[in-house]
Image (cartoon, rainbow, N blue to C red; front, side, top):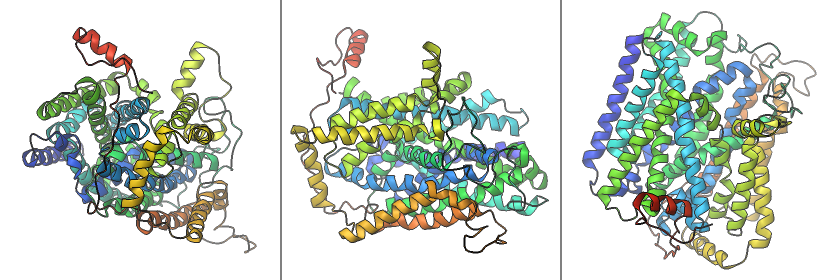
Length: 631
């Protein structure tokens, strides 16, 4: 199987280079937008499949399967959190797309920084993009390389796999830029979904013995394999106290959904939507691919794959499947490998291009010609992939520690994005205050903050995720509270006039049709009820709702775990909720016809003092400087 797997990997890498070469030959050589953001004309089909692929790979498919193998269906329930995460994306992505066309705010960094007139917010979004591009991507790259080394019995060493993967991912990005990276990702996403379904089916057909649900999931003793262990547990957190029956209570599942919102609202995902050509692609991708196909695949297939793997884990399943059919084993191995590599390529490429576009070009090298901009982006990509490979090779532990901050910190951008999209009364001061408090809560409930504080001062009484609440939940609770409180006192003033102009343009050029007051109230009420029953405290009913119906007076011979049926049932109910926003309210439907470019006077962003001082040292005082730094 080793030779076959390596052949498939080489073929996939060659296909990526071929696609990138086509993009490089047909693109406009002198236009930097053609390299940095595809001229904001990405094909709709590419955005549809690339978005779904990022979601499926960004959730860390091998890691998700390992969690299901360790905690059973309570961990599989996390995939249901993708539905509200996609709802959050639908709420804001059209307004960001319009901001790019109407006001020229053509990246998520520029949109938030320009709307709130804040350099601090610009640097925060770029920091989040770097966290996705380096520690999170390095962890996924190291995991894929380690898995390849195991599957080939050491024929391909882990270090060689890391550098080989990094080089193969680097080539399409450096040749064709953003368009090539997205096109390659879209094709890989189609391949990943097809192979995932095929290999799960082949495992059921070829491997002997019963599978799920006849065979129980191989969880350790003391863990509930087919039930949620309560609404909440008064646990001090991971590292301090062991939660009884498992850590995924309904509070943990609900707060994990907020962390998944950090994935859908990550700078790279927002850039993907903003650079897509107008049409129905944002709606189709959100409803049928993200909330529909990706969520359904994770809920339905994860227990089947994990049950077949048994207690030996995924490598044992690959070997067993290869023993029955080498091509089937190689296909499953390819699924596990490209699931991590797709997210790695996307986050490194998008993060690097955002840094070049929104930090290097306005602050460090503002007078570059179009060709020099493209050259700078290519140099930055080379440095980024080099740093990625070095981090994955020599500091995998540091990458694992700091990658924990990426999703919860990205989720802290939700109030700022809501303000840009709908709530004009949310002020800059409120957003910055919320970001500071929310980020502090995230930092102090994740490994970096715990390690730093306990290493310098004293042991904290809590560990990671106290009360089984994800750090994203703690952060957003403080964040939203601060935003609401501060906005009460700062919603008026000169900066409100600046924000109003964009919202007035939204109202006149792309009004949202949410229906009448009764329809809006009913639909939002149904969304809250769905969240309560699918992810909140009501999800505990799923433990026995279908196996021990309340009015039956006994047990029902269902033949399936009640919680699994509950998950699939609420997945099917969740799709219409996303459809209502994307199609019914029109928040996924975009069109450039009839849009008018508004005059948008954004004050030139002052160079932060630390950047100006660093440039002065390097250039001998001849660099671009500014006496003041922005807030």
